[in-house]
Length: 296
Ligand SMILES: [Zn+2]
Ligand SMILES: [Zn+2]
Image 1: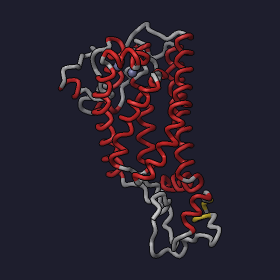
Image 2: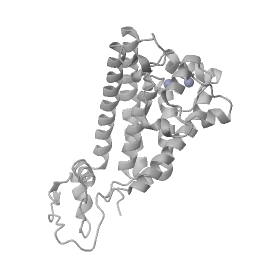
Image 3: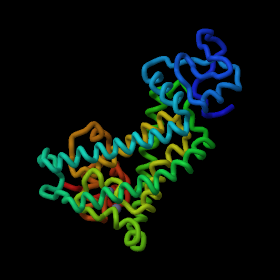
Image 4: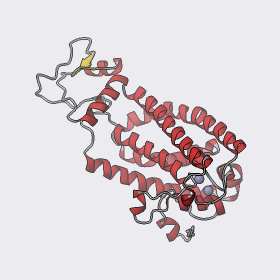
């Protein structure tokens, strides 16, 4: 059975009508040609969405299909990254929230901003877009699912927590590796161009660093083969978290309630002094291996 099926199947449900032959719609939803073909070769009794979130998901994946769904998600994620980066840029430009600024009086100039934008455009177009074409067949092979029902909240939270810890753990060791002399000089030094980072600098990096530390973001999902919904939410969270930890501001937030949470202040300090606080969000590994320094 094709793993990219949209809906779960039930033996009952006469109202769940799929149009015969063309199968252009299910429960009033237009389906992509890919989805119609998937439905076409089976005894189709489908259970539809049971809440608004499943309705949104059903409409999204049903209309686009899995691959286009991944591509459009990439575009949405990129827009969110740019939008939040610009918002933090406006905060910087207008000198708002000075009380939360981690390195007071350090603001980016126009040439620094332009250099960052050019690098990010290169990374998002020349590195990440080709990765979509490599990643999608891998996700399919691993069994990432777009089926309804969506995962339960307990499954969603368990997967999400695992992704956070897997990313943090792998990021710590790969990041430390990137600070060895040859790798630092030839790859990671670029990311440290800005000693006082700002939101958009989250992805300002050498293309190889995008691949290396990007792997850390993907290693949890590659191990668990989650539902695409969980996967998308995780990637979006990770992107926005990276913007936040590079924002240069320490804004009170709910993640501070997590034990050993380092956040923006810890990573900002890493950019300032280079040789400490290698984890992406937690501090326990830095504490364990003696690389933590309190930003104060
Ligand atoms: Zn950084
Ligand atoms: Zn570093």
